[in-house]
Length: 174
Image (cartoon, rainbow, N blue to C red; front, top):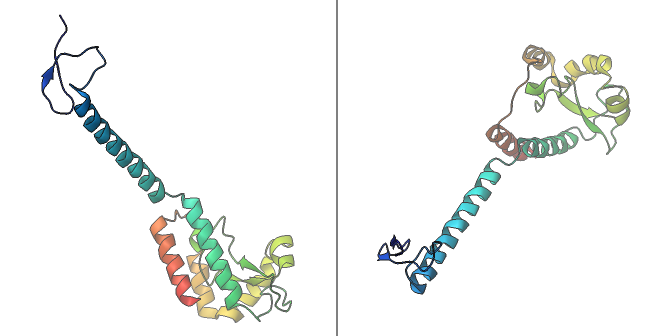
């Protein structure tokens, strides 16, 4: 004698034909499968939403860097290289006074980033000596002193919210 089971759909008792049977009849089977598909879709939707929410922090940082550097090039258009004084070119880099890798808190600081020729930024490692002489003239002594005070090589972990807010602020300037 087969053991009776409770239908997973209508919750009525029934005698199954085999041990794998979960529902009492084909109508319940159709309804049960619809519910299962819907719950699977909801699960997939939740997973997709979680993935979007935790969209990689590195992707947010890259987007912020692109927006910021585009803004810096636009802001410094027509100004010479901050380090060597080379006349403005469209291929200028957005050079950091305090390196972005070590000074992550200043990575997106507008006083820390200025238009710099490729030669100084890439091949002379930022040409720090000349940059440090020109920077106070470009941003003013008070802003320069504040930048120096804020310079802290401790690593800052940027959050997605901070990066989104920063992107929005930069877009307002553009």
